[in-house]
Image (cartoon, rainbow, N blue to C red; front, top):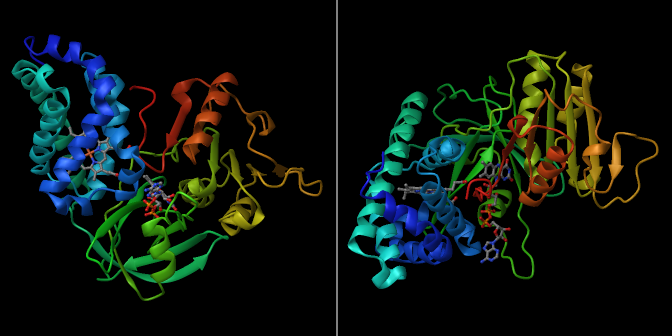
Length: 401
Ligand SMILES: Cc1cc2nc3c(=O)[nH]c(=O)nc-3n(C[C@H](O)[C@H](O)[C@H](O)COP(=O)(O)OP(=O)(O)OC[C@H]3O[C@@H](n4cnc5c(N)ncnc54)[C@H](O)[C@@H]3O)c2cc1C
Ligand code: HEM
């Protein structure tokens, strides 16, 4: 509980933090990386360059301040952060470094307005939140039976081109010991050590069913553009990783856990490479619950960008109650010969009907896709508590910030 003495300072600083939040976190990262350059290996420097991570941390700080008396609002946010943190191997002692630099940045940006009382109040609030994260992260490391930061060497046994931009990599433990189990929807972090000494970690959803003697990840090569450099890790994996090569990966973590247990219908909506966790669900259900009613809708640019077609066809053969529909954005007209392929973007009203009030809906894809579908699903009468999403980047916390 935040002390009575600190409460007014926190309450008063919410609008100030909102105004200066991005400046504070920008200064925070700059100073922290100057003093601890080794932490650049831990943070996603692609997100840093785009500013998304700065926004995310700022949003988490606001959300915490704004909801200090209403911790249940933060539950999903905290869950997402701790899973991400453990997949990256965050250690308790690193909270002191982050805390010192965050408070230092508040002081630097707010100047005279950052009175000792205000800084003390924020130190108290920071450590309340940090202690929650540290405790939950400890529990997750213990459950997975791994030390913080422990990575495992995996050998690549198969590389396959799923579609124009996506390659799948199939991995087995290099030491021959059994794999850690996972739930469909979870991801691993993959560490890449570049020739110049930099390390970068990225998360990749496991795209096969659990219970197999291997993991599979499916990686979209992030193409560059006029103002966008090539994605570092995805391109490196595509260009360098061959069968027999080794990769360092984390244990599986992640709190996007589609319901694979009950026998109620399920709606899985994905776009682009957001299909990967959905394929894990589908492949799992085709073995464990082939009678389950599932709507599997996917949006992508074109047939040449459509990944995991073989998985979907195999699931269709095994699951009589599976309904699939695909939207090709670059193909304006609906395929007359195949009613399951539509032109244009995914439209909720074009999906097969389902019981809006009772069916869980899972979404994964680019942020713009998820915002649009989320709104359309709410407008179509789906209650928010039945909606679940996975974001392939820092979640911008738009619902709580
Ligand atoms: C939980 C989770 C699961 C995921 N699962 C998958 C998966 O199954 N498959 C998959 O392919 N991906 C997945 N991702 C995304 C993946 O982790 C990486 O983010 C993705 O591969 C891009 O990484 P990268 O290193 O190639 O690109 P980065 O180098 O990180 O760049 C990312 C983007 O930022 C742009 N960028 C970089 N620097 C700048 C700059 N200075 N200015 C403007 N733009 C810039 C790049 O052009 C690129 O488009 C997942 C992410 C999360 C969080
Ligand atoms: C109270 C303290 C902290 C808060 C509130 C916090 C908050 C967050 C948030 C909101 C995210 C984004 C999660 C997502 O949606 O993907 C994140 C990611 C991350 N955090 Fe923390 N964090 C804290 C402490 C730490 C510490 C101590 C470290 C270790 C140095 C750390 C390292 C990271 C890294 C490396 C990422 C991923 C960054 C990326 O992908 O760009 N965090 N954190």
